[in-house]
Amino acid sequence: MTRRISSSFAMLLAALVSLSTASLAAPERKPDLADLVAGTYVGDIISDARGSSKSGVTITVTRVAKDRVAIACDCARIPKVEIPIERAMDAILASSGPHVFLIENQRDPRRLSLTIDDASLSLEKQ
Image (cartoon, helix red, strand yellow):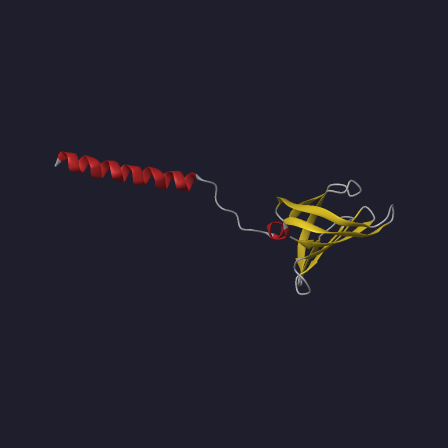
């Protein structure tokens, strides 16, 4: 009987330890706009004040903070930038700064219009 109580106690202790370990884990954060738009986009530089247009450009949008994304491009002409974003009616757009970041959810939620350093891009999420 002592053996049965010991094994029951050991199982109870193991369950309590696993529960306390789970509660110590970082709380899961709620996804924000940056999570929603993060991903790989492919498209074209459709106009460029400093050069010609270019097809087949790949942009990577990465969440860096709440409602803030980093933009990296495989084309050296487009510098890496960080853009704060916000929702306005049915669009997600740059909340401040010199860059244009626009996703019109009602029109086409996979389409990203982007202007960085006088170059405008039209991209589609992959």
